[in-house]
Image 1 (cartoon, helix red, strand yellow):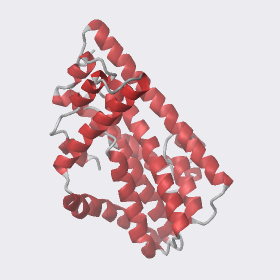
Image 2 (cartoon, one colour; image 1 turned 180 degrees about the vertical axis):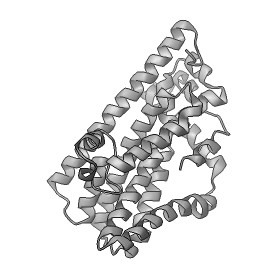
Image 3 (cartoon, helix red, strand yellow; image 1 turned 60 degrees about the vertical axis):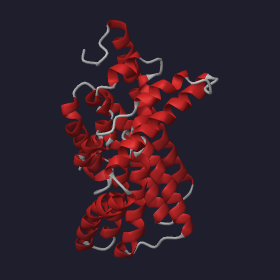
Image 4 (tube, helix red, strand yellow; image 1 turned 90 degrees about the vertical axis):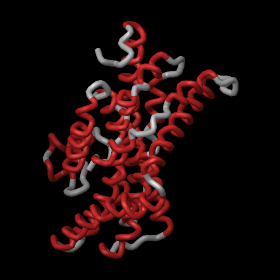
Length: 292
């Protein structure tokens, strides 16, 4: 599933993010950090723009994602009443999480492009640059997941309203962000082992598909695997989406969204901690490529 991610490492431009810290407009520490994130996000979007136009994205990438969800939805239609709807929702939201996990691979692009030593040597925080570098996956994932639900809803007899779609979109953004935090953490671990990037991201997503509830309820995998799912992104966000689309949105749904947010924040803190530690170590002992 992550085969398309390596094709985007063809236009390295993230060094602009490192230079943002020196511009006179950033008058405060917070302003400088926001500027660094902005330049990093622009660099990532520029890379993405070298691979897709809106036509190739819509007729190529999006159709591929849509076919994946349709495949599982069709299987659900053969399994019995309500299963097509269950699998449609689960796999559409899982698509959003998949895009977040793609950050595992794209975090290593700076090492491949040879710009990582310059990021370490710059006055900016490399962790902030790498945090912003892959943000383009978020709107991509939300567009794929939301588009799949809207287009395939009639296939699964899923009835949508404006309110449901609005809440769905908000929850998909949340799932994209929390999954991105996990992907960034995994990327920080394989930053110096780029050959493992797709292995790790595919393994992580496979585990999420098993224990987070897209294909079967989390209760069906047993208490041990269920506890693993409890600390991963997607699990609580997906449950919240199911409640919204079933017309049962309420306080419990808000609680699920809050848990999803907390889990994402923990993974983000872990990712930034690892990246900051590796940057400081490299600056201290000269291992600018993070190779030791």
